[in-house]
Length: 323
Length: 157
Ligand SMILES: Cc1cc2nc3c(=O)[nH]c(=O)nc-3n(C[C@H](O)[C@H](O)[C@H](O)COP(=O)(O)OP(=O)(O)OC[C@H]3O[C@@H](n4cnc5c(N)ncnc54)[C@H](O)[C@@H]3O)c2cc1C
Ligand code: SF4
Ligand code: FES
Ligand code: FES
Image 1 (cartoon, each protein chain N blue to C red):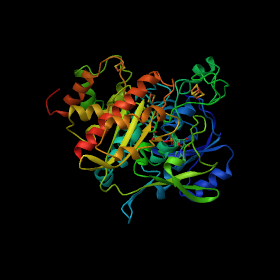
Image 2 (tube, helix red, strand yellow):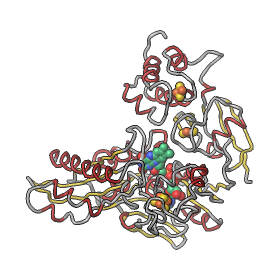
Image 3 (tube, each protein chain N blue to C red):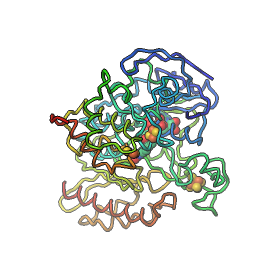
Image 4 (cartoon, rainbow over the protein chains, first blue to last red):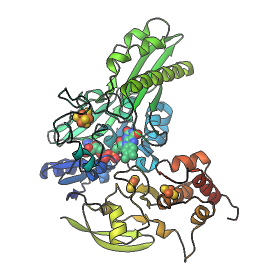
């Protein structure tokens, strides 16, 4: 018998009820598919007193084509639904490929877009049982004082490891957020902090209701990830690319990473790649300063840097050649 | 502790149970319904031993709260045999040595059962994909894939 901490579950039917339920209960937490949060509850990492189960909120479960060519994806859409959606598979292959590579089909059956974007950051010293962590005096991110990854520092370097964020970011995704102070939206790339212990810029009680992507027309896109086991695993490094080709040049390119830093990184300084014939080495030369894994996985950071560059090179070449 | 009445259909039988909000489906199955076929093999969603069907789809009972199954059909490995006779899939696991120590077997069978219902003649790679979340420490998986292939074939077992 698994002794979970005592908690109460509230099951709202609308976003408004969900936000109100969060405000009405002390120490509340949203739960969607539960494939990330329940693991952390079982391991004693978090112990909220109230779970606001948003699985019954129908208004966040649709995928709708927008009039201007974009798509609005409800935060409650499951990853199996997302990967199987005709428009996503056709116009946004990077998103379908990323969704299909999350965990295993049993997880994707219930795992949601919102849960994937709000996924907790991951680290070798954190995603462990209570007895494992207590034997190690915990760590900075949870109940402890020292970061075992960078003991002389004062921050947490746990890696953001959701597969969807980079694939959505290369389509200029915006997130729609509802909270106690109403509704707001912001670019997905601005929803994250570079801090493994506080990586989300959401205010207390705010929930994601949708993500809106721009038209995929004219873009060629894809997603690639390296993981320990091919059938089921978080990314050691993952990269999404969307590009537009004109003859031997790029007319536009967007590249984003996951699994390497504490937030999903939108690669900067790509403007230079548009001058002259496409040069894949100039692209990978941008990585070392921006893609900075720390020793937070069993595989060393050097491997993750190398594999991030190799995945980028292979994916960019393939997309360019196919265009 | 917050409790509520849970009505669900368990292996074809409608039932009503008082269940705490914080009870996992696997604990409900094993401790309340006394169906101990479903196994717990890890501390969080990593092994698939706890796989059951919820409304016909394979899901992890160790990450699912029992109360969230209200009004649903839950099927465990105990529901496979009919009238004392093992299902064709179960017999295939037995004949083709898809089971050794047996700990992963209930989860493997439920994940495979979910696959065969929507895709009665899967390719080996479709079977591998469907069983991707199920870990086996004994068989090396080859025998498990062979068992599913045998169950899906029309051949006598
Ligand atoms: C074995 C295993 C392997 C995995 N492999 C991968 C992988 O390869 N790639 C990957 O990306 N993930 C992986 N995951 C993690 C997880 O399954 C997915 O990220 C999933 O998409 C999370 O979604 P969920 O709905 O289950 O989230 P939940 O567990 O319900 O929630 C996750 C977090 O998000 C918050 N949250 C959920 N919805 C909202 C919302 N609408 N607004 C605000 N906050 C919200 C919750 O409070 C919680 O903190 C794996 C998990 C396991 C157990
Ligand atoms: S990076 Fe450091 S503080 Fe963060 S989870 Fe790992 S050990 Fe803990
Ligand atoms: S017990 Fe291991 S996945 Fe459920
Ligand atoms: S038969 Fe022993 S774990 Fe699979």
